[in-house]
Length: 310
Image (cartoon, rainbow, N blue to C red; front, side, top):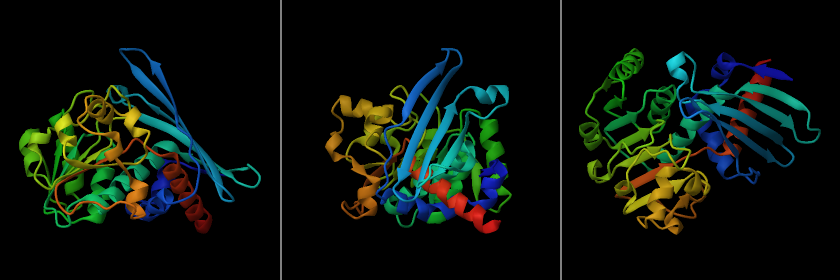
């Protein structure tokens, strides 16, 4: 059995390298039961435990155990931690233990990039990233892997954090800047990628450009929201799993009040397999909550790369 820590994972893969494995994962015949979701902690210091198993017959078995503690950064710890255990299909033997935080960051951004490749305008000019957590850097990398942008904007509740991330990204020669007026930034953006722990809507549908693509990553509970109901009205909506309609407040609310019909929500799998077609104009929206088969595909890719390296 091998062990891959945070640094090892990043030596073996990046967001771009995982986009095609994600594409294949969503078209695979594997199994991924609904994840187990447990609320932990207290009202003052909330936490969540997620357990996500998946398997592909004759290939691999895997399970990810992840914790999400939104207030951890205040104490100097990452908000997401965890581990991934990869097992052999024929024997159940443990093959690898992989840093769960690194795997989650890379595969989440790769799935968003895959969705953007299928949904975003073909020639966008402005990318807006909302949120200043660790995932923001990966989302920038992912969106840049599938589209070219003239400028990148980043917004966060703490302007200092937004500027810090912009400075890091700018070192690589990318045209990025931090601003504090979210409405103006949204109005100028062709693609908006949100990864926050917000419990109130940040993005307003009234601000969106005519052909904007909205990538919503953060909300994984019914109490969490990143976009208002208007963002979903007359919008082509795609999810990574139908469970998102019960797990994310971004979808539970507009479904409950009749803004959208659950039957109009498409699966990323069907878009990849061309069972449904994205519109050539208008708003598109991708909502992800995390799919265990995507984690399994990322783990298999990392294990194969590590085996070749050794």
